[in-house]
Length: 68
Image (tube, rainbow, N blue to C red; front, side, top):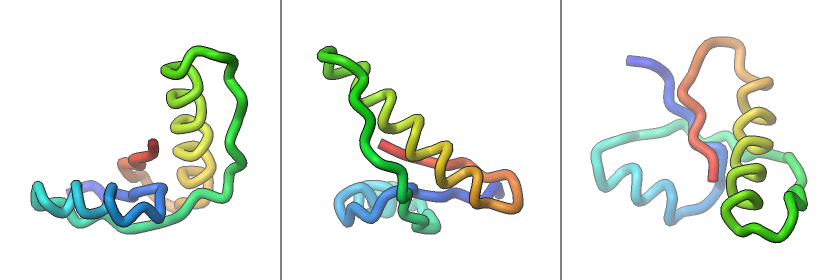
């Protein structure tokens, strides 16, 4: 099974994944929030990509990185 990483320290996100039987490794992103304009969906998507990429760059092997 591929390594799964949650790029968040949120206990709620972790609990949601664990509720469906997933046990992600937690690696918190140190990426700053980005301002992607005024459209809420664009802001959320941009921040998730930045956090995902920041964590993925720290990994030494392929992994599924989940960020929000």
